[in-house]
Length: 127
Image (cartoon, rainbow, N blue to C red; front, top):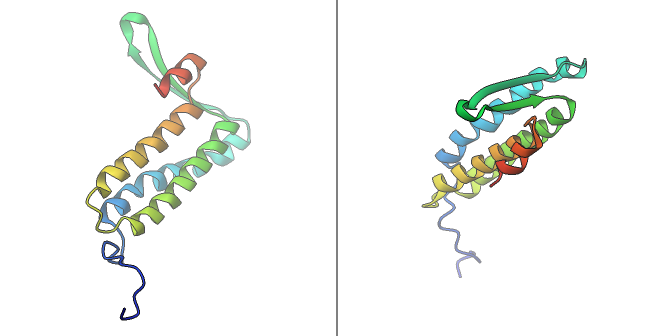
């Protein structure tokens, strides 16, 4: 028995390199959103748009107001903490890179749901 109750051989200690690299994404987004906080509190609204399908006159637009900023800070802050936890937990796992790609993709989808300017785009974003 030698004092060991469970075999955790795939948990080698340290942090997963893929996890630490992918933690940069939510951390930078969180910092960027926090930098916009004072201006949004004063009532400024940020919006950005790109022509997506010019033949159909479809433009991809995102808007950052007070409510979307609040949810964005929550999503990126918790996303960063979850990524850090998973970076420790996934050390040595053969599919760690794939896991972190899906995790960051999920977080990006959450941000895409809270920031579009049109409901029709919001409802089609997750499809």
